[in-house]
Length: 306
Image 1: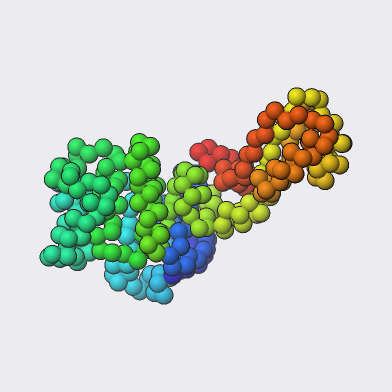
Image 2 (image 1 turned 90 degrees about the horizontal axis):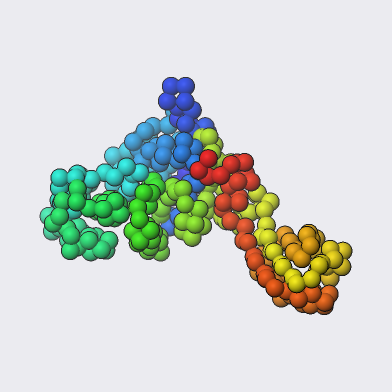
């Protein structure tokens, strides 16, 4: 569906994207995760045909983007990071404007606008001007406008940034629904939990380069991080005895033990039995799952917002 081959993009002396490559299957949700300035938005802008890469090529739905810009624009829905709406127009008027830009006309235009405003929960506010909307409402209209021409591919650049938690959850649920319906989605975000829940595969991008990509499980293997289990007991612990009972490495500090293991939740019963056999009374078990935050920190040496 999408093939990105060694694309680069510079602005003067600033090398925003440095030879990145990835492929996306039809119906997949592919995440681009990275800090500000990593090259996410520049990549989205090249995929959307707004910018041309300095080198490399982009193939969308079997067509090279260089020679098929006009045709491909009809297949792309774009939700930019900056809200792209006319503040002095109503939601309804914005929907009709953006739909007509993509050649949607007549009753199809009106029916599509009505359907989508209802879908994003704003049918009862459609006659109000955008300037009176909250940030979350504007972002929902922005999403609806991007869908007016029924695109095959949806490009989402930080679609939930700067909105309240309730609106963020609603927008996220709408995007999940689109993906369940089979839409191909490219999704950039700062929010680890969004990428974990929504994306089939994730590319971690930093300083213009993709440093790792794959499913969450594949990224865990690439980064070498595992789940960590913390067990607190009422007695002082013997590290050597516990290691023999557990048949794995354990780190003990007084009444506390720490075990590093993949899919740790599957082994909880074994841990409990081993501790009881050793004569220890467990007062607390806490499993900290390996997640994107840990993966990102391990691979880049910094937190996402550094």
